[in-house]
Length: 134
Image (spheres, rainbow, N blue to C red):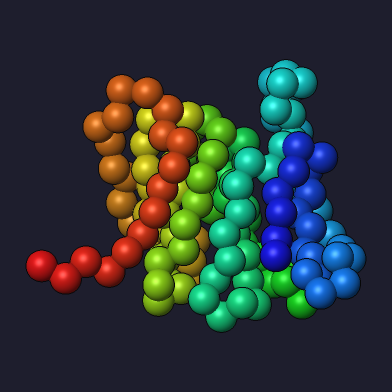
């Protein structure tokens, strides 16, 4: 289990023991210094391989190696807080939803945004990915 918190950390938990086995740090303060959500980590998703997680905060996402605790990629492009993230089933892409009213699809290997989906008139609170067969 992985949790995201307003204390600027992600924590990896061992369900059997109830103990925190790793703490991931690296999300920074908001540049405007506002204390409402300053530095908070708003969301987290686990990759299918179980070795990586992706987290969202102020205008960015970070991809983490759970074993080493290292941030292996930073995905930047939203103009406001990122409040949800989901990993595609193949683990190659993630989708993020933001207060900037957009969803962005990211290529994890390159760190590039491959699509920006617009159309909401309010902030995006949830995002999900799926393989759809039509």
